[in-house]
Amino acid sequence: MRPLLIASLAWRDYRNDARLSLCSVLALVAVIAPLLVLFGLKFGLVSSLTERLQRDPAVREIIPLGGGRFSTDFVAELAARNDVAFALPRTRQIAATADLVLAARKVVVNVEMIPTALNDPLLQGLAVPGAIEQIVLSRTAAEKLGAKAGDQLDASFSRQLAGQIQAQRTPLTVVAVLPLEAFERDAMFASLALLEAAEDYRDGRAVPAFGWEGERHTGEVQRVYPAFRLYARNLTDVEPLRRFFADRQLLVSTQAPAIAQVQSLSRNLTLVFWIIAALAVAGAFAAICAGALAAVERKRRELSVLRLLGFSTVALLAFVVLQALYSGVFAAVIGAALYALAESGLNQLFMQMPGEYASHLLPSHYLVALLAVLLASAAAAALGGWRVARIDACEGIRDV
Image (tube, rainbow, N blue to C red; front, top):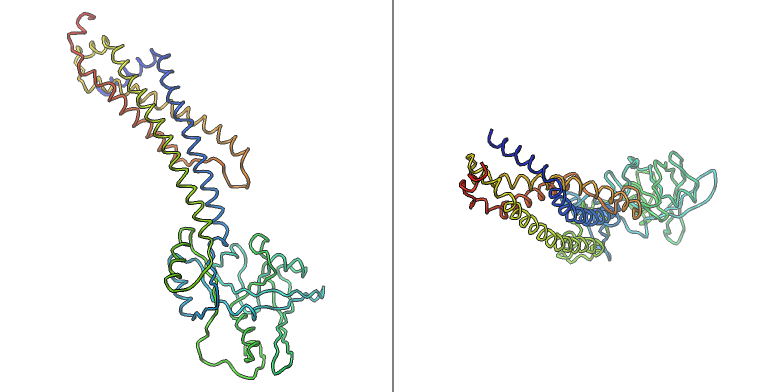
């Protein structure tokens, strides 16, 4: 019962001093609202930039440079790593081309062939070729051919053998068309088996899958690939993977500098925020301490009467702290409301893409801000209200 009584008395006294209470609330709002806006800008800007990079698979792509010799087992080991989202061997680029034509238009388009499989980051949300005769077209190639999903194309693969130009044709079915932002060159994404068949044919080997004849048959020797397609799982995995290849004397190209730039921006903005926050909180802390000291002196007579009625030092200190907490709660609510208005205006002014924010806070941020305000208010009030311990019960006898 005593805690409820203290809380009730503190609230009634807080209401009676409405003007002073309002001043303490506004003083806290002047600190809380700008800090919320500053942190919202920092979090919204960095989050939007990070999400933009994360959504772009090219940023997470790791491209081997120079001619390598990679076995199927090596690429499989890469794909099994926790920091790798997708890995697949690539055949020689000079052999990974095809001439495509749509029978209805007779327009021939030369495209590069890119191996693909399940979980390909570029094909997110699209059908993946499940058979050797199925392909996905890039937008530019589809527009030149006039093709769409479900169309059948005629693919031609040529080679020079014994001084003679030879060619083989096979029908391919378009199962999907990539959006332009996913891939901007003329290309078709196909199963690795189709690329291997085209490479074998151009190397003069027979291709049993299509019935193409050659001077020699494919032996049992394990195939070696000159490159691979590899995408890191997250932005933070790009640099460790680059070091992994560097340790093995393998030169690769990554977007690590762009990722590092965003991470550096995040660190710098965080540092600026905490410097400003520390100065603002120190000022608010001092103001609350001074307010608690002034309140104890101003209400010394009332507090002495409470001491006379049997209230302990802890109870009197709780009286002062509770009033500071009341101000903290009101200031936090008003500050959050003002931030919500500022956030709406800032996002309308500076938002560049749907789903991105110039300023943004999560519900957890509001909760942390509230707890921080209450903790700082309670600590400052307790530090400033220590003088209640010097109030004696005899001081209240004159007012009884």
